Image (cartoon, rainbow, N blue to C red; front, side):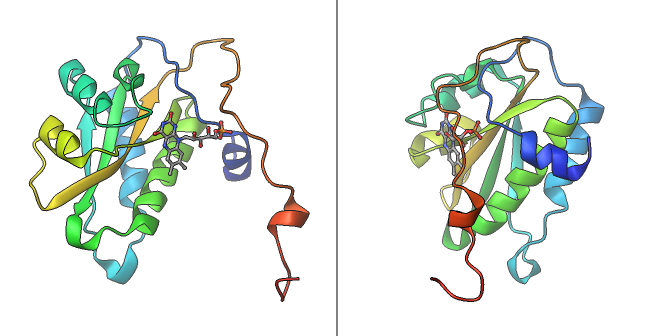
Length: 166
Ligand SMILES: Cc1cc2nc3c(=O)[nH]c(=O)nc-3n(C[C@H](O)[C@H](O)[C@H](O)COP(=O)(O)O)c2cc1C
């Protein structure tokens, strides 16, 4: 699968088999996150890898649309100092990891943690850090139906403007 095909075919998947993700593959995914550039080269984000079932369940309670995340093989949280969270940097790390995972056959979904006190408590994050997003990872269930949340995208000729707005 080349980079274009990986980007174009990646969809967000929330149903996984019970098969674990091995350390070598997980490390490739984490390396992909690591290699994302950061604003001012600050590299202030840190990744929290959660395999422990109790910790995944605690994280599930810290999001409003996260009840399902305890079925993941791995959850990776992207943590940042609260005073300098750069969502662009968080997004780049997240997309790098999701695209590399997809190219290896691993399904993923980004998940918002809206309740930061609970998210901090779940993983023991210091009070001056936030973990606003986690990515779930797992092997996809074969022949699973499409998610009802799956979306068509805005057509290219609506999305893109050339030289001027109109
Ligand atoms: C910033 C962001 C936050 C998201 N948060 C959640 C979430 O909390 N729970 C969830 O199930 N999906 C979440 N999603 C996944 C979206 O619902 C998903 O991108 C959408 O369903 C499109 O899926 P598709 O790429 O398969 O069409 C989030 C996506 C993004 C980009």
